[in-house]
Image 1 (cartoon, helix red, strand yellow):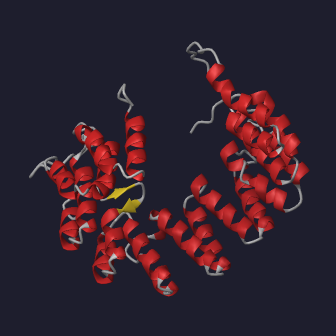
Image 2: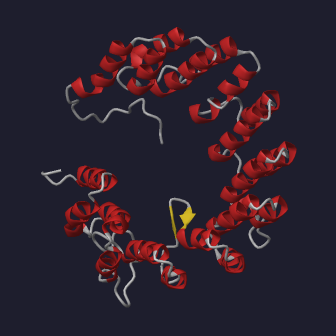
Image 3: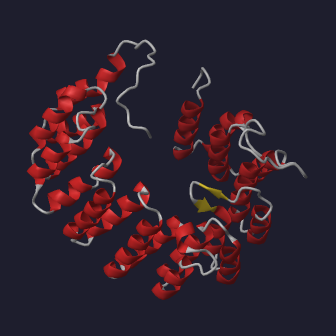
Length: 349
C-alpha cells in the first residue's frame, strides 16, 4: 500500500471500514478520488464515516456541465458517467430517489458489466411503470432483464417472459435476452420451451459458441444429454466433421452423462488440439467428475504450471496438500521466457 498499489490501498481501506475505522479509511481514499476503483471504495465507506455529503461534493466536482466522454480513452481517471453513477448511489442511500433517477438519466453509457444502474434502482423501489417505459426504450435489453427479474420475484412468470420477448427487437438480434428467457423457463419447469428458444437462436446464429454452450448446458440440466449430442452431431456433419476445440469440448459432459466417459476421453485425446494445456483441463474435469481424480491429476501434470490451479484443486481433493502448494508456486518459480514469434498452443480467445 505504501508504494501506491491501488488494489492494496482499496483492500486496506475496506479492512479498516469493516473494523469500525471508516473515518480513517475515508481519509486514505480521498486523495485518490480520480481512480475509479478507489472512488467506489470511498463511496462504500462514506456512510460508516458519516461523510456522505463530503463524498458527494468530491464526485459532483468531477461531473462537467456539458462534456461527456464518447470513448473510454477520453478522460483520464474517473470519467463523468462513473462519477454520476457513484453520486446516484449516495443519493439513493440518502433516500433522495428522484434526484438519483434524474442523475442517472444524464449518462451517456447506461450499462456496466451487463447491468443498468437506473433499471436496478427503479426495480428496487417498485417503480414498475417507469421501469416498463425505460425497458421499452433500452436497446441493450438490460432494463428488460431488471423488469423480468422484478416480475419473476413477484410470482408473475408470464409477465417476466413477456419482458424478455421484446416485440420490437427480433430474437436473432438479442441473444442475451433469449439466454435469460431460456434460463427463466427452465427454472419454472418449462424445459421444452427453453430448449426451443435456444434451438431457434442456434439456427439463427450458426456456430455461435455462446449460444451452443447455453443450449448444451440446458440439455444437460434437463437430463437430455443424448438430444444435445444429436444437435452437435448435426452441426459437425454440416462442417464435414471439423470442430474447433471450443465447440468440441461441449460434447464431453454430454457424453459423460450418457455413461460414455472412456469414449469421451478417447475422442478428446484424438482431437487436433487434444494435447494442449487447455484441452487437458476439460479432460481432467470429466475424469474428476467421474470419480477418477488420480487420472485427472495424471492428465494435468505434463502441462504444469499452466494448469496449476486445477492441478492443485485435485491434489487437495486427494489429500496431497504439500504437493498442491508446490504446484501453486511453480508459476512464480519459472524463469522469464524470451519473446517468441512462433505460433503457440494457446487458444485463439
